[in-house]
Image (cartoon, rainbow, N blue to C red; front, side, top):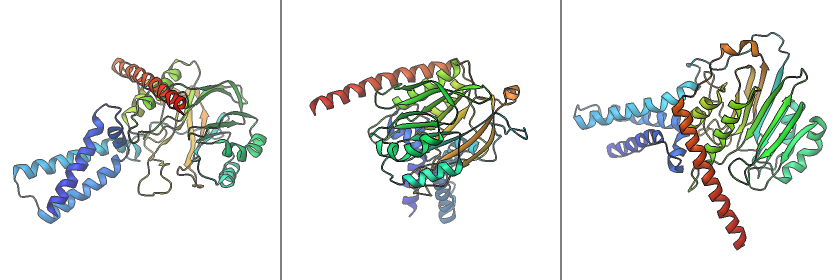
Length: 366
């Protein structure tokens, strides 16, 4: 039993410190996800070890227990910011009757999920101004189109059979809309300028990059997010970035994205708002994100009920209040951050080109 606890403690300690390595290797980046779980499990092992065997005072044992404690602290310093104990980054509106509001619903519907009607009823019940749908294929588009086309006069559509399809529906006018393939030629992202009834225009970017998975590193994910961050920073208009980022809110990639873009995360100081995995309550992570310019204030945010997908939807309402934007302090990038972002973008573009060539070769063989 003692040896079992020691081995488990060593493995979890390794899990804690490995993600500090700035590498796109999938087996490192996937460890960004379970930081809270690792902290809880390692705390349990530490308590169990001391309760069962005490502390003998030997140098080796003391070093081991101290290392376990440092590993727990290392994990908690990342997730702490997404607890109510941390200061809130995005402030709530103080306007009694907000006049420039945008409600946005984000949902990864899971391509193989067939509960079209259940999802549709959720959209109709919550009645958002804008709906972003990740992972729709042509079957999803065909089932949703009749009702959503009636309720949302503006749309951008790119259903695909590779789990990276995307649909965007809006009650507000969308201008200069583009379907972009920023890094990989079969993974789309959307860009549009949304015009509110008041005449206010803001940029909306929707993304869904690839996740870290077996033998699939994250160069293209990092590049796609950072390209979007730079576009936001260079835009003269306020911006919102939304989608299934396939990354957790506390990762170094997400942190760099925020620093480069200068955007706010409404979850900081409020909670995790875990959206994945809807099927497994013990292992859930915040993968679906909304980041926005400081000229917006938060009105409301909630995780919606599950409907058959492995993701929960997120509903957020913002109000445009440019007079108070200085009261919110988004992260800022320094020269080193910009240099790192440029390097990651270049690596991602090269990897995206490489993958495209591999896919072309495979299709040629077929």
